[in-house]
Every structure is written in C-alpha cells, then in structure tokens.
Length: 217
Length: 244
Image (cartoon, rainbow over all chains, first blue to last red; front, side, top):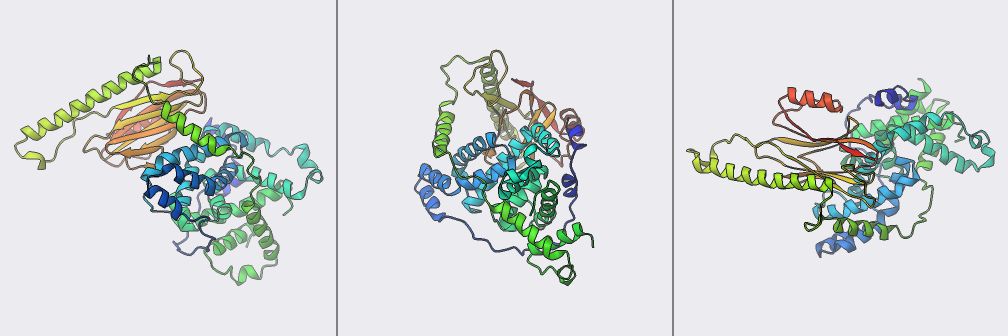
C-alpha cells in the first residue's frame, strides 16, 4: 500500500525530498519569545503542584498546540483528541522535565510527536485527500461565493497536507509558532541548517501549490 | 535563474538573516514573488478558527483521571487479553528475579570479583498489555482507541534495546533505550512504549536487542527481523494483536 501511495506523490513532495544541506549557521530571526511567564509554571512544579502547572500550561499553550495540530493534521475530528493526548502526556512527563528548554518548546515537541503519530495512523485517508484535491470542487470553481481570505486559507490547508510531514512541521513551527531555528532544532532533533533548508524549499512549494489551485495571493 | 530556484534561494537567505543579494534584488520578478511569499507567511501565522470548546481542559483532567482508574485491578477477573498480559507480567517478574539471582551468583562465584567483565546471558523479555477503552470486544481482539503498552527490562551489558510496533507489517512506532520522549521512555532499566491503536488491523509487538551498530531497517516486519538477526541482534516477536 505504501509503495503504491509513494507512486502518487505530488510535485510538492518531490520538491522537498533530498534537500541540499547548506553550511551550518547560527543565524536566526529574533522572535517574540515565549508568550507567558514560565517561571510560574516552574514555581508550581517546585512546590509539587503538578495540577497548577498543567493548568498554567493549558491556559498558556492550549491554543498554540491546537493550532499546530490542526494544520499538521488537517482533520478537525482528530485534532482535539490529539491535543488532549498531548496534555495528558505532558501531565505524566512534567515530573521528568529537566528545564533544558522552555516549557513551550517542550510542549510543542510532544505535540509534534503526537501529530506525527496521528498522521501515520490516518495516512491512507490523507493520501486520499491529496488525490482528490486535484479535482476542484464546485466551491473551488466559484471562489466568488466565498471571501478571498477564507478561500485562500482553505487552499492553504490543502497545500499544507501535500507537504511531507517533516516539511509541514518545519514551516508551521517557523511561521505559525514563530520559533527560532535553535528552538526548532530542540524539537525536531535536527541541525538548524537542515531545518532552514527545509523551510526554504517548503515555503516556495506552498506558494506554488496555492497558485496552482487558483489561490490569489 | 529559474523562478523556482530564485525563490528558494531568496527564502534561504532571508531565513539565515542574509541580504537576498543584488542578483535577486535586481530581478524584475522578485518584488511580486516577495509579496506573495510574505502573504503565505502571513496566512500561516493566522489562526483559522477561534477556540470554541471551553471545556477542553476538563476533558484533559477526565482523561488523566480515567488513566489512573484504568490501572489493573488485581482482584478483578482478567479479560482474555489481560490474562495473557498477566501471565506475561508474572513471567517477567520471575525472569527478572531469576536474572538478579543469576547475576548475584556470578558476582559471588567469580574469582576476579565484580570488576571482571560480565557476559550477559539474560534473554530479553517483551511484556505487553492492552489498556482497554470503553467498548468491550469479545475474544482476544482489541478495539480502536485501546492503548498498547510494551515493556521490557534492559539487560545489563546490552547497549541498545528497541521496542517496536508494526501495523499490517509496517513499522509505526519505535522506542530505543536512549529515548526521552514522554510516551516512550526509560525509567531505570525498564523501557516502555505506549501506542494508541487507532486503525483496525493486525499489530505486532517486537523487541530488538543488540550490542553493536544496528543496520538501517526498512520498516517492514519480515525484512527488519531478518536484517536484525543477520546483524546479530536478538529479535523477540509476539503474536499479533487484532484490532477491530
């Protein structure tokens, strides 16, 4: 089945395979940084209040995890289950958190893993979506029925699903979560330069896909 | 320069905080391309839907509570799956105790004492159990949404141990003894892997232990087992678990 599916990979999938690896660079854009004062979470853990720590994490990063998973999975039925799973696992893993990264990066790392798990388990469905995405729906043929913004986002969702999961994760961590490459490196376990190269391929691939599907940028 | 090459190079330079360079800056296609790439970035950063489920945090706590209450009850009559798992656990405990006793004997009887390199004679044991969801299924089948938990004890002297789950003969999850992930971790000498059974079909739990460099395995059960064995690894295969 897998071999058969590979034969149907799109141009975008092909475009981000076998990436050239540029020389390592520590340069990365500054970001807004973490969104909450994580010292409160650390303080809760220091007093052994894991419940309070998890509640702070859920309040601070629940939306970010949901957003990441939604765009990684492109499947609204599964997204909320995966987010729940992420925080249940975070509850277990909080006791082992060593502070080597921010809580946000650590949590997004768990989210990434669980989203990739979910992608594997729905791979057949995803491939089906990719195949059908080349056949424009009625709504696609009549974009004037929707606002340009809504239509663009819908096409973007489709195109994201056509990226390899690793490329999809990279562009989302970079542009949706606004992480730096060193932070992404902690999550992905790959060199910043590798991730920079992946993003450099994936962003143009997304642009091309959107326009190919009639999206007006 | 082709337009595809131009934009990849331009994005790469921007992402490493370098100027895009005069060749790109002077290209007549670049301003339009730059605007479009910026627009894609902007679209990626916009959240497409507001949070509508205000109770989601309650759901997390309910799941955590359910996880705690689903711990096996020793007094309960085990299901067929749990019975097998129970036997495995007992086997695991007996083998662990036997291993400890054997290790002690080695230390006691060794003329050179504990500093002498020990040869690991303990066979790896794969213990597995199914955490059942709400719906009961007759027989030995598991159901979608159940969770498969694999556990093994990493024998002393073994460099790597890997727990694996195959679905329909294809690798879907793996956990090495060096793992630090939350659902795949090592506490002391115990390595565990937890995997949610989301798709119907046959799942096969596998344990691979080896002392050297394991060759790259292609991710197919039969091929992986053959390649691992050929490399000198020990491979423990469990009977498959059918998920309906």
